[in-house]
Length: 103
Image 1: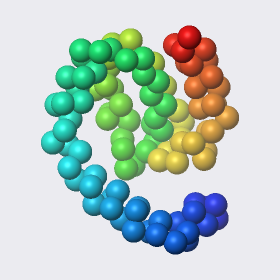
Image 2: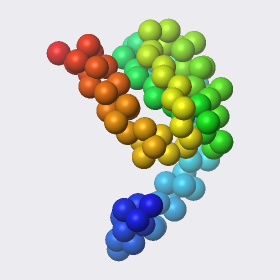
Image 3: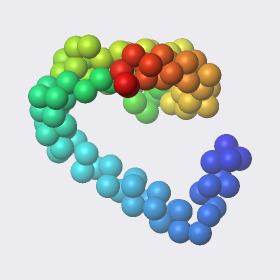
Image 4: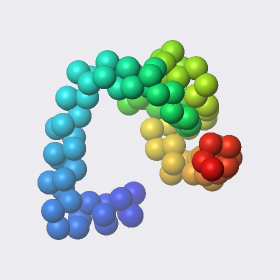
């Protein structure tokens, strides 16, 4: 939290964060476009999701598998701040995933 706050306190950063927050509302309208891209191109995807996330519940992770059946989904025993709570495990998942998918 201290590190996050230090980044937020940098000049101009609060405005950037607010703009990002306000633009989030435009995302749902673009879901069909993104889903079509996934179906067409089948990019490798690693999904590390906190199964106890109250902001983005775990049920939101599974639909990715409809468009990307080879996606790698990991529901971790963590909440919304998965990287802070389970960063070492996510790092291992990323290294393994990249070793298999990046030449």
